[in-house]
Image (cartoon, rainbow, N blue to C red; front, side):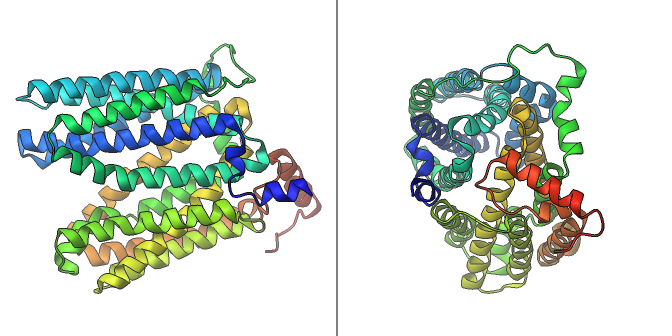
Length: 431
């Protein structure tokens, strides 16, 4: 029969032409941004030799998403998501051109670069919820988990290969990475223009305070979405060992820069491998439980990494962390996208993206502060134990999330089935 064949199709999402162009555009854009992030770090450190300035690079790009959260998601729901992506890509392309000009002219201060990064940060703040919300408009609900798996694969690939490419290109001169990124953005702009503009239910809706905060209200009231987003936030907040990799590479495992490179690549290897596996063999049953188990495995692997004094064991733990995190991301993104009505996807995606960004930033801060107080090993071990505790606590606190079964059925059907089941079982829920 044709329906089962589609369900098992590893490339199901790419059977839809609109998604193929969308996928290419996002991949090229992410790759270009990764090249810029590495090149900017090198250039600023060459200028100032002050590590504090490197911290400002990430902060300047994150703050706009937090400050503009009420407007970025609302824009994605009110205006054309494809159009927002296109405008943001064009602005980022001009920003890359400005960086090319600065590298050509030479700089004595990092302030012009910081100004460009602020523009990029504002553009990314609008780009993220629009692009996240556009994916469900390009494929039917049954193919969305497959699309999310491929999107995750492209993101992981770009975040692994992009920084390497950026570093190698910078060795050819400061202009080389920025020129390359500019070419990537131009190609991304062409690809996104080939994505058809989907219909949106509330385009042209008047804006009130209620519509602006609708994303927060929906997340707060929908236990499925709230549980999925908050589980990821606290798991990443407590299990953030990535920031301490230089310390483990140098002081714990006594490795050189090559060892740090292996450690940094390991989570991505695990994530890419798992994403490819999920694209061909999606989760059919017990999706909610699979997410909780994956978070638990992530915490246990973090514990192993913290206690390891062997490079192979540390790499194996990090690969496991990347693979288990990908399962969690796959289920969470599918649930959030399928469970959220299309007219709210932009605002809910904006909330989700800020939660993710905040957990990453605060997770690195948490790891750094704890490492300075009690040592890196204890900081990672305690974080891993905390992630395990979060998995158990959220499993008990969000039984509706634990009961989610399939990801490849229509969200409305899933909601109705779960609601009917809960109405028939008003008492304590069984596993």
